[in-house]
Every structure is written in C-alpha cells, then in structure tokens.
Amino acid sequence: MSMTESLSHGTSWRRVKSVVFRAFTLLALVFILGPALWLIVGVVVKAVPHWSWGVLTHVPSGNGGGLENAILGTLVIMVGVLIIAGTTGVLAGVFLSEFTGVSRKGRERGTILRTGIDVLAGFPSIVLGYVGYVALVVGLHWGFSLLAALIILSLMVVPYITKATETALRQVPTSYREGAEALGMRTGYGLRKVVLRTALPGIVTGLLIAESITVGETAPLLYTAGVTNDLPNWHLVHHPIGYLTYYVWTDWNQPLASLHYISYDASLILLVMVLSLLIVSRLVVARSQRHSEAAR
Image (cartoon, rainbow, N blue to C red; front, side, top):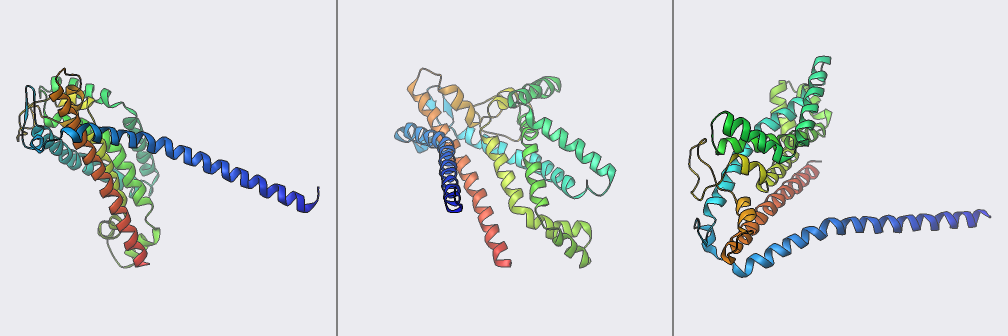
C-alpha cells in the first residue's frame, strides 16, 4: 500500500469514528432530553386545562380545594434547608478546600470528612426518613414537625453542597490567594473578599441544585413532617406541615376527578419551582462568566 493510500485510509477511518461518536452523543442527548420533555409536556397537558388560580389561595377540602398550605409549607422547608444545609455544607467545603492540605493531621481529617460525606450521599432518602422518624419523631418526642423534616432533608443535601463548594474553591487560581497574601490581607479576610467571591457562582449553583432536590422529595417528609391542611405556623415541633409532593402522591390515587386535578396542579407548581431554580443557577453562572471575561 502506497503512502497516499495509507493516508487516505487513515482519514476515512477517522471520519467513520467521528460520525459514530457524534451519533452516540446525539443518542445520549435524546435519552436525556426525551424523558424530560415527556414529563414536562405530560404535566402541562394534564394540569393547564383544569387550572384555577384559586388553587394558590385556598387550602385543601374534602373534594378538592387548593394548595395554599402546601405551597407555603414547601417554601418554608426550602428556606429552612437553605439556612441549615447551606451553612453546614459551605463551611464544610471551605474546610476541605482551604484547611486540610496544610498538615498531615489536616489531610487525615479531610480524608475522614470526605469519606463520611460520600457515605451520607449514598443513603437512600427513605432510609434517612425512617432514621428521622425513629430518632426525632419518636425518640425525642417531637412528633411530626418542621424541625425534624429540616434536619433530615439537610442531612440529605449537605453532601451536594459540600462537594460543590469544595470544587468551586479549588478552581480559584492559587495566584489569587498569593496576591491577597502579598497585599497584606489576613487569611480570613482574603478568603472572604477574594477566594469566596470568586467561587460564589459555583457555590450558588450547588445551593440551588440542593434546593431543587429538596423540592422534589416525598419519602423523608412522610416520615418526619407528616401532613396537615393547615397553614404553616411558627411551631418547630409537635406540628405537622403541608408540602406539595404529598398531594401529588396521595390525590392521584383517589377516586374523585377533582382530587386528580389537585394532583396535576401540585405537579405543575413543583415543575415551575424546579425549573425556576435551574434557570436561576444557569443565569448566575452565565453572569459570572461574563464578568470574569470582562475582567481579563
């Protein structure tokens, strides 16, 4: 075989591999987008024809009603998880990124903490919910309550926030830290004003994704929050709280068409919440990238 034929054969083989690779990437994209679009379209088609704005301002009744209690309860749970899990996860991520590599003892602590986070991330949500029921609802006599739900949901999403925070901080160039130190900034001040500010988009993205996970959970809440048709109050224990996923799960199995409509409405509201959180996260990332490019 001549050199020309050999080069032509090699070029043809590379083209075939390129076409096959593109075909597999498109197939993977279809497998991802297909179910997502099917879910979105299915929820919208079932919910919109029977939608009533009164669902936002009324509580559930025997044969329908609204979802005001569940909407407010879901928002309260989201805020509570953001405070508890957000604070814990961000601080853990900062510790893993900034304070575990300076000594052998620190590296050992970092290894133990990362192992614990990986183990916690591997627990099924229903197992965490059952643990919360045994330890908090029954063991501490809190009953079905907001605080029990917040603790269990926070334990569930802390690993995601921690990993997102650590990854975002490790992507900050070392020269930023060295520059802050050269300017005479103390370690804590430089961390707050330079490092964390640079890593903020990645941290915020991790927080919003954790919130999206929180919105869609049902099993842990069944074990810890219980459910009630009353509006949320300021009691942290001994008072159950409503949430949207309960009505999606429960009303779909009821024999009344009006309760089916409530299930569709709850699904649509949840879909809007999750999509809003994801859009906000993408906007935060896009804006931060524009600012960084302008700074360069």
